[in-house]
Image 1 (cartoon, rainbow, N blue to C red):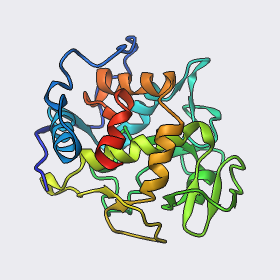
Image 2 (cartoon, helix red, strand yellow; image 1 turned 180 degrees about the vertical axis):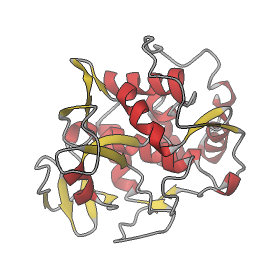
Image 3 (cartoon, rainbow, N blue to C red; image 1 turned 135 degrees about the horizontal axis):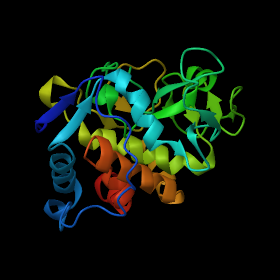
Length: 256
């Protein structure tokens, strides 16, 4: 296990949603310490980079952050939901079936980190999702599935896995790999790893299925919206990046 670097905790009443344009690329030398490294050495270097001087939020603040990171460019008062890709008013968040809520892509029960600041509030894997879809996905692993989901027909589901629609499969994979590199057991947090199992109701700090996630990363490379989101998180909020959006080839280098 590696020790996480210092983080800064920001309370519920942090600054309002910034309106400045997102950065176009990581700063020069952001990944300098990772250059020329491979495998476990690359993973260790990336962990140190994305765990240093990170701003950490309490869970209620995530509503405001997602208003910025997942904003619908065509309707700035809306957010775009991760699985359905539907645009819904940001103000329509809550527990009802007509609302959206905060989906933990790395299921929070996989490691039992809940909504604790850190893994439980890391917006690199927190996305808007319609309440019924979030409920149906539950804490299933990701894999190719047998049939369509009831709440989102372009996604799939079976007894032990959830398969998102084609256009977000790579996004899902890169979020899972980010979490595995970011959280290595320091500061009393979880030590997360992807693996090749799909286990119903697992509380182990692992997420599957790695072979499928590797395929999804290659088949669905980062698009403009995913890159803009990475920029917004870095510039406005957590001040760290998902390295696998900037360098998707590093997924295969570390996990392939």
